Image (cartoon, rainbow, N blue to C red; front, side, top):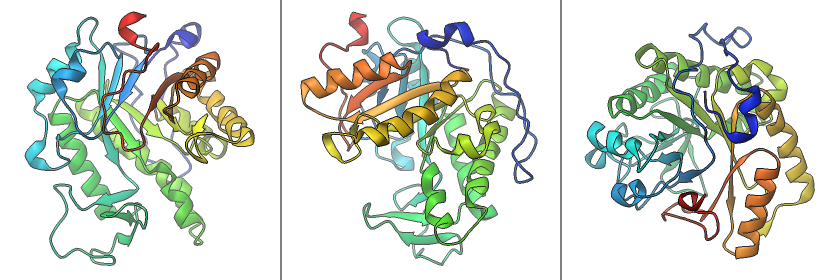
Length: 310
């Protein structure tokens, strides 16, 4: 379990996986060992320079498992151990893992694959070339994800940052009534698989905070959630998010915060006043903020918000 300063009084509750509907398997408890304060984080997926990141003072780091996204650039256990050591107190390092789309530059991709072959591979995302929607409830996709997860575990990451949780919306809108429950089930299966090997392995999800309203036990499957565009970026980068959207996101996120689940916010802005505003509003709500560029291809240390100066 992560702790950040706003939730220290509520921390320490043992979270036991009670299961979600009949779609989820019974799992092991969420980790509570190695608790630490999380008050800052870095999110970068491209252009990764481990030495440069290692000189920062971020409490938590989210990166790809590979320098180039593929197997040839995969980071070693020694590299991740060095990054985790940090310049001071050991920090948490999470590996990005997309579970709602397949990416054609990953190690698992085979020549000749196309939508429908294999059967779980669906249409290409029109906004992200080389990314394909997946029928994530299919056992074959589960095997792909768990194989990927094993590589992340072998490299010594402290946890995973699961993206495309909101892929359930695509299938639900097309009539798959169980789409949301099946996504929650996949998140649970990832936690179960990982914690057989590492009981302290962290599971952090990105977006789709509304799932907590439909599946309250979702809180017991994860250690953190990251929410994009809560203050800037929803209607365009460096543009304020509509207040009604912000209010809805905050209402969902407060349920996670109340359960001592770490809440991260990711906003996309470059105007200094917008950056300052995003940090101030996030912290006022008890969240942990980071403001960056949409491509996540730079090591960002925002002026006035350098954790080394805190």
